[in-house]
Image 1: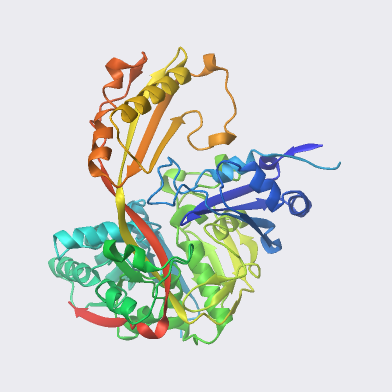
Image 2 (image 1 turned 180 degrees about the horizontal axis):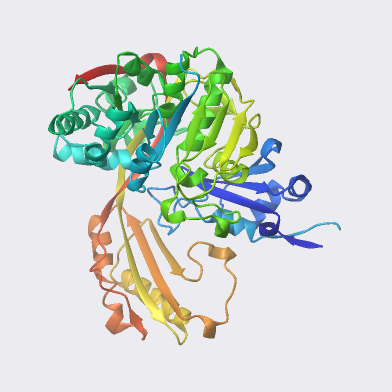
Amino acid sequence: MKIRLIDIAHARSGDKGDSANIGIIAYNDKWYEILKKYLTAEIVKKYFEGICLGKVERYEMPNIRALNFVLHNALGGGGTVSLKHDAQGKTLASALLRMELEIED
Amino acid sequence: MKDKIRIASGQGFWGDLLEAPYYQVTKGPIDYLVMDYLAEVTMSILQKQKKKDSNLGYARDVPELMKRILPICVEKNIKIITNGGGVNPLSCAKEVKKVAESLGLKNLKIGVVLGDDILDRIVELINSGIDLKNMETGESIITIKDRILSANVYFGSQPIVEALEQGAQIVITGRTTDTGITLAPMVYEFQWSYDNYDLMAAGTVAGHILECGAQSTGGNFLGDWESIENMAEIGFPIAEAYPDGIVFITKHENTGGLVSVDTVAEQLVYEIGDPTNYITPECIADFTSIKLEQVGKDRVKVYDVKGKAPTDFYKVSVSYFDGYSAVGTLTYTWPKALTKAKAADKILRERLELLGLKFDEIRTEFLGYNACFGPLAKEIEEDFINEVVFRIAVRGKDYNAVERFGREIAPLVLTGPPSVTGFAGGRPRASEVVAYWPSLIPKELVQPEILIVEV
């Protein structure tokens, strides 16, 4: 079955230099396990193709049911240099929550 | 020793809600008001202001705010800690002193933390073999040596604690970690030892939750944001801290917003890298150890935080001049709004080409369509698009090219696609690009200085 991330999690994103980070927090333990299993660094890297030009790192935070993704080279040079309207990656969390994941029933 | 202290966040950045610190000191009991004014870009703006006038270079909101809240803080014995001193904390303190005197306040000590500004020492440091290489790219600072605008070390809580020990009611610092201004009162009041890394981590985590103001009390919350009440009078966070390191995040009762495990968790993940290694001057905090528990309405317990020994380095933030940029916008409406905006983009780029103008980067975005989501934006049937803002930005070393770009936007109104408007703001200006160079410096090479200004 297909799920949309916004239905199972909330998230926040921000910047550190030219890297953006997206912390995604599952609403319950079951959804956290789903995120952990399916939302891999590779999938996130592929999803943000054309936005994130560097690597994607994933960190687990089971204490708050969260995954933290660091997207390298994703902000057009970083906060003060970037020509992007969203130079600090503030809306990338919403972009991620729009993702649909195919999961086993 | 106090059995608990209440530390209130008053500002999350320079430009934050002006009423917030006033609410914090009037709507309920607090012991400390902490205000973070500095971001990467702020330091270079302040450095430019100081260059023009040696009395400037601090957040001018600070003395302005003091006129309003200082008498209240004195009466209620609320101490104030802020990094709004920017690149000129002493001038900021002198202005605050003037304000205090004009209000007839007496026997007030303003602690000033100096020593973070190493701009004058950069060449000497480089020559002595401190390479200050870029933490992200590994490049040597030599490449930007002649274009440096500001260089500041991120001090932690220690100099603030010293100022408090010397009796300061107000502490004004330059570049200090956002978390240090919240940790400092805990170290001071509870006499925490700097080698108790779990306590350092507990205070650091509280600082991280407070450092962006209302972002932990329902602001910018991507969960069920529509259910959050009275955003107009949103309460900023308060950390109620105990000597054993347990902290309750809350807010004043008669304010809007929400303090829940979800709103606090969202702030915990904000702007972090590896959560097991959150590095500050006092410790390396492990964000995967943090436990959150809802223990009442708008009350979240934060506990079990673990930390380990800090590194031997301070972070240094260097800013440098990196050319010029300009941004232009025009609005196109139905019919075929997006097609028109795309045509305008093509025409403009052809004209820049014909003029032989060279840029390091040209970027086009269509606000209302794909400005934020870029390649992830979903296709919309064009007839449903009411209007689109065509936004084009350029960046380059040649001032004249960037300036000329600014003169090529308005002509599109009469020489490009129809149903266009939105050019009331004048020509886009070529503004200086200030780039940021994160680096590290051995702690033993920089010493904070504390100065007390007496009123």
